[in-house]
Image 1 (spheres, rainbow, N blue to C red):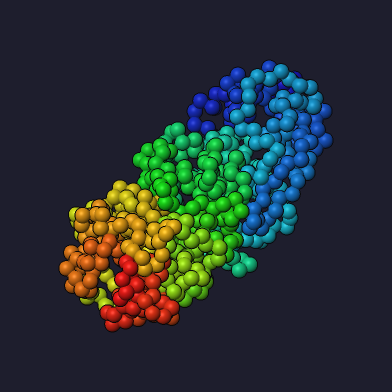
Image 2: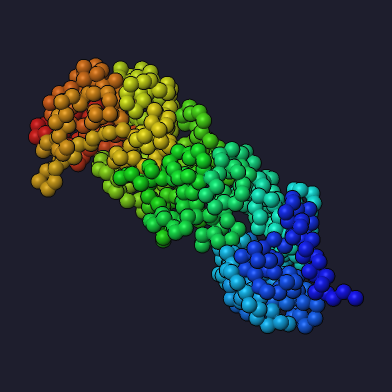
Length: 622
């Protein structure tokens, strides 16, 4: 009669033979601790005995041989967690795995046989801190959520898209063996981590998570637009040194491009962040850095957004006390908050291969939250680019003025100079056509086409509306002839401006409104009406013919004020608009004086109407 040990040895011989060919049956792989090729191995030649014992096994578990860990584990949590995990009961399915993988008990510490002499080290120790691992051992009964397949809470079954039913709930909850088969390392031939089925294109994840349109408890499914997003369809090739498993493209890696089921960043979301983390950058933004930093994780690196974020003027990352959260409000108080996720929805974003007309949202920003032109919160994703910008640049509180360059002072916005709603909305006396279409498009200086960055080639037609990003953009953006990413990620210019725009200021500490052109002196430039990047008004020259302005076609004093006296456009014109109720001005042609530079001649405020000024400027009364 053959002994159990001899039967196990015979079985192992079969397992070893099968491993040389494409696997078709149980293959222990590195879980075969009897093989010298496994990272951890011992002298016992019977593979099964490292986990199971025919006699004298643990009282809990399936004839369990390995000593259980007595460690209390720290479990996953997040601000939107619907199904909270609870401490697993000793002997429950996941504790079998943790008896080796929490790192507190040595592999080969067997109850029937004592501590075997083992060699090697484990490369997949999770540690008892499992807050960075996918939740398991969930509190029952399971609660439905918009991003979950209905059958999880309804009937306790998954929706395994393979139809094989390999992904299962264990005793009604998610356990390690819902996703992992410890007896077969090759359930996924490209991701050889003992998965119960292939996770190519997110197949394993989509067994429990759904992209169907669902609303549960007033929350819409954030995964609904996933199937057509760039992260779901991208053919970008993943480099072998990326450490992202054996998948060859971003589309194949799918959810795993941004999320890690084990070893994720703390704080919820299971984000796959760089290790070590990037200093000074919030955790949510770091998840994007793996591909968008110009590195070599992708064989053909995509546009380097991180290079813009490292420029002198860049959107600020969220502070530790003002982090992005999935359930955060639409209006984001404190403009030291911006994260990638505030302006981009990774589940919905599409590649921008062509540039749509203003004011529609760009494909890369699809699915983001917004505030409409009246300041009302939107219940559907932003349809226009400015609606997303108004999350911070509207009625939000706690904004820091002057942090990104000199801020003009006007009589209408002393309370919050960074709230642009009134400057652009339908009630404004005049406005650049961002939130409403232009009505006077035949201005003498207005060009039919915008210039590219070097003012050597015509770009987009002017149209009747413009984007926020036509002024606030990377100084090397692709849309206007550069080689970098589009959008206000970062710029070498103040206020995240795409091009140079020098603003008049009264020199401190002796200067006062009305005393002079201020600093810097614009007429130090030989010709301030250049159209190229050297012009102090290169941003204005993108859309306006500066030669026309120099010829005084629209205003008889333009040339003298700018070239002789050295004043910037900013002295007399508001770049955004003139809100209704602005004291002293009719608001035509964006005229709204910078009261830091200009003083009133009579009365309490400088005035302008019908081409006539009442003010003191450069020491002269007008």
